[in-house]
Length: 406
Image (cartoon, rainbow, N blue to C red):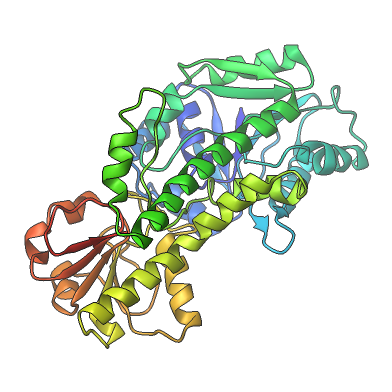
């Protein structure tokens, strides 16, 4: 039996994939409301293909519990935020899950950490905790790191088709866990040492952050001198060895906006480029705010309540608001005493912020300046109701004459 610990965006789909493919699975989370919801057959977030996968897994006998199970295989998929002051990983959730596992696990158990962790986390925090409990690593328990590689909006496909990395002290144990993940992963599964597995996941997201930062810095340069950054990127990308990404209003989610800080926090004297990229991407909500101000001045709009932000999620077509650029922008506005801006997101029906609308037409009727923060398919289908609005299109998705670009 596999006990999956943490049933959020990563743990739940992972547990369901194992169960769908015939393994006995119990999903554990300390959130009783979450467990009650899943036990009643109700999902806690939306994701393409997740509902069908959920029902298949329920039919295969998956169970949900707030209690850790006595078994020999554990997958820990709990949150791993960073401490903003030190820019280091906050390991408390992983440590707490580990301690609970050690209280019930069978001798020789596999403890697999899927949560993204900074290089050296297992050496610094996990091994000492295991040893303090009197366990001999490699005999009583086996520690492994198998970082997730999926993105909201495409989770089910990527669980099957993205390559995986298994970090293990022991090659034989690593191959055993490789076989476990082979139950649903159809891509390459690489077995390596634990520190390489830790580092590879952080490096992947840091690489993406740096590339996004380059596009965002280009957007600032071009906007300052009245050049079309999108035209320039299109032309530059015609070169066979150039692939510049698209700029945007900021970086959100729990991966790209967080993982690079692990390296900055642990290697402060060696991460100048990474730190600069983080500052550039974190500055984009402020850049959007300045663009809003300039457009309001150009059109004699003095009332901030005539401004509407479209999109609360951190990316298009998902309901995940973690580290959302829109929330970052609203915080900046709050710091400048700019209250009353209206907000709408078709995928977020519960109230998250003040002045949040649930009806798109009502939202549009109340504003003069529309700021597109997220490129949901919804807004592309409703271009006709925005033709008389002034638009700041930070995602470059609307081909309208009355729109400004980033």
